[in-house]
Length: 376
Image (tube, rainbow, N blue to C red; front, side):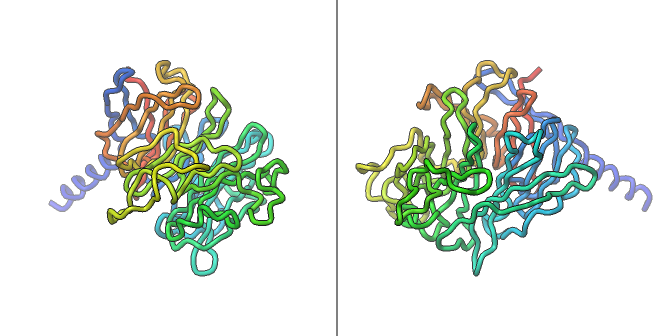
């Protein structure tokens, strides 16, 4: 009897460890399949493709791993700085330098312990591959300044533009919404810096004694998605609203995007937050959601697997538990399609893979990398 029970337990373990079967879902472009590439990740936050097709993945508790195309996880990459893994904080975005093939440089942002709280920091380092991957020459090139976070609203998405300058999104730490309007700190801002952390001389607030020179735009809440529109070359981002009022914006130099003065949401307790939905000198979003979908991750699609989706924008949703497809025309957003709602998964990140498929990260303690492709 004992042997049969052991055999039964082992059979259950084998089933649990075997790859989940692909699931099929409907879309306006036809049936699509979702398959699990890898599992066993704890709250994965961001994904970047290495030149050989493997994936560099961050886990919010403070780990970074290399994942093979067949789903094998490396040991944690050695050399990641200590992170404040509390609340929404931890290890967040990661991107490869545009010259990664030559310099092996990556950029990553995280909640950095500071005083009795935490703040967003951006670091760079060289990825040394192998059986025991590590980061060498790690240097923090930006520290967010302003009141510290108790564990919420770090923002922390990175985009490197063709000129190699870096955009970094910064949250307003939840407890300090009005600081998004205060140019003397970095809360609720988007900053623009060089790869070494210095300030580009053409940043809009350079030379103003009342403003941080790194600041590009302000009046943001908590942005967890950012990407370059390949059709226009412009930097796009989205940000969380409270109960309603998630926004997509195309941040321009020195512009004020309104939080918390204007917006389309209400507080979590139902109270009014904003003075109004519009005000002179404050920019309107190009898209907003009421009720909130809690957007995270963002990617423009340019691959060949989905010809009908080329030029479309894809946004993951946490509370909304779906993938949102948006048709884009220049700087305007048109028709919306909600995909994969049947998965009932919090989608943390969205990336286009080198094979033209879409890759998603699911946000939970048994997080997965999912591959989305046309059904055969």
